[in-house]
Length: 287
Image (cartoon, rainbow, N blue to C red; front, side, top):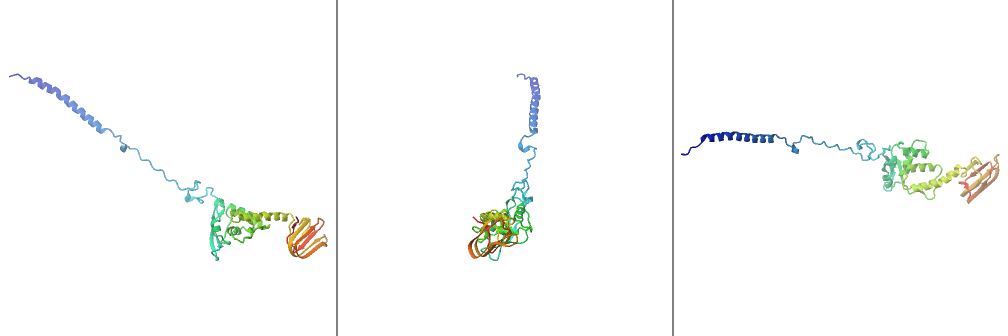
């Protein structure tokens, strides 16, 4: 019976066991190290989420003032405006009166567009009206009014009367009418009759200049050389016209009378002291 060397087997087993134990421990440490390693997944990041920016306040005219606190949200210049102006107007459709409103417009100028669309023949201010804007102040100054009231200018601007005398063909505004028309044109430069109004002013300005020069005058007695200029003058379509030239004593140098004439002419000399006329209409330089 062969002999088995049991001592050699025991020694071999004793030698292999520590090696196996060490290998097992090493694997356990690798697993533990792998489990404790921090995750780099984006979901595990500790960074805070970005805060959304607040929505800017509405500012439709871009003047830097929010619409909620902007008195004139559609005007970047924030020009002072008149409050809406109400007018009681007579139109083709409503004879008893229609309430129409003028709203603030651009650059402090009132907007009559809605009123003109109704084509009122006449209007009256409903309530009081104070001078507020720079445009209104300028119009008042040009008008030569002296009562601090521009209601009449608003009423002129509002009406689109087919019988408007200022818009009549060939009409020449008087020296008193010219300032009023010019003032209205400052307030409502795009009025439907604006072109005709300007023509009336242009024609009237010629006469106004003649009047200022003492070369256009009506009935009455005038000092020659001081109130009127000497020269040859004419008038047309008269009834019962009488004129006389006077010396410094009031005596008549020359005179004339006609029951009716299409044209009357007189020459006033520089040596005359005064000129007097009645029912002769308007004297203007002869051409």
